[in-house]
Image (cartoon, rainbow, N blue to C red; front, side, top):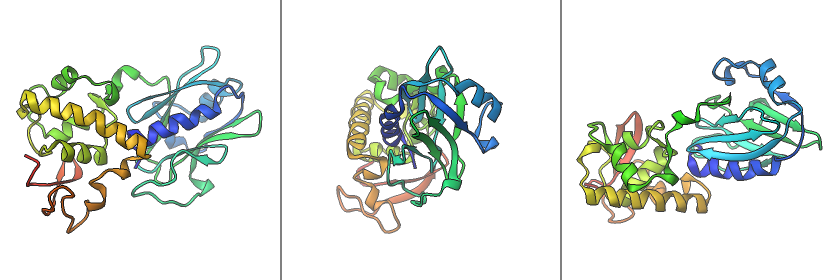
Length: 261
C-alpha cells in the first residue's frame, strides 16, 4: 500500500519525466478523474505542456506543468504504482497484486520522445486531480515540528493512531507507518490523543521523523522492523511478547501491550 515512502519514490521517479513535451493524454477511466474532471478537460489542460517539477505532500504526488499550467495531482490509494518509461517507482507493494497489467493503467501521459508516465492501479482506489487544494492536505509529516505535533494532538479524545492518520492534520502517516512509529515510541495506539505528556509528545515527534527517514531510505513502508510480526501469532521484536490486534481508527492495528503504554 503506497504510503509516504512509496510516494517519495514515485516523486523521484517522476523527475525522469520532466521537461519532456506531452503529446498524448490517456484517461480511460472516468471514475478515476476526481472533482468533476473529465477526459476532455484533462487532455486540453495537459497536452502540449511539459512537466516541470515533482513535489509531494504526504501521500499525494504534485507535478507542476509548464506555461502556468495546472498542477497535476496523483493519489495512489492502496494499490497504485507510478511507472515512467516502463520503470516502476516501487517494485513491491504490500497487499497489492505484483502483476503488470496494461488494463490497470488508469491514467497515462505519452511524451514527444516516445516515453510515457503511467498510473497503474488494480483496485481503482487512487485518483487524478488538477489544481488540488493543497491547503487542505495538512502539514507533511517530514515538516512537522514538535510544537506542531502538540497542536495536532491538542485536546482530542480520539485514538492516538487515528489522529496521526488524519491526513488533513498530518499528511503522510499511513496504517503501516503509524504502527511502526507507535511501536518504536512505546505508545499504545488506542490512547486518547490528548493523554500524552510533554515528554511523550517529544518522544513521538522524534520517532516520527526517524521512522519516516528510515522507511524512505529502506524503500517502503513494508520495510519496518515490526512488519514481519504483524500477523496472527506474531511476537514483539523488542521483547518477544505476543502482539495484540484490534481495529483502531478503522484500520487493523498491531501493538505490543507490554512496552506500548
